[in-house]
Length: 130
Image (cartoon, rainbow, N blue to C red; front, side, top):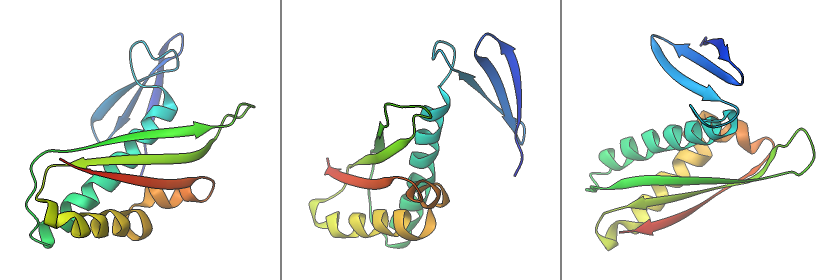
């Protein structure tokens, strides 16, 4: 895997991977900050797993979103100490155990981003059935 990240101005960068471009902005005006991108990467990684697992389980769902929050140290380098992902999914209440199983498989076995973050931070989740 390789990315190319190019400085544009001030704290603004453009990062490219396989022809896809994202904006990074340390001032968070014209793009995500680097740590927010890390949280988005975690949510995307786990979300892909959860969708795939639920499809294999034949669990029907419609709306699905994740809110990812991190606590971090006060001193530099400010690192994450705890990350919490709140999964919100619209599915039948009787599917809750299967959804939890999919989330736990993602966070404990399949999601590489979660595995990397867990080397330094607690990664927890909450589930909201809509």
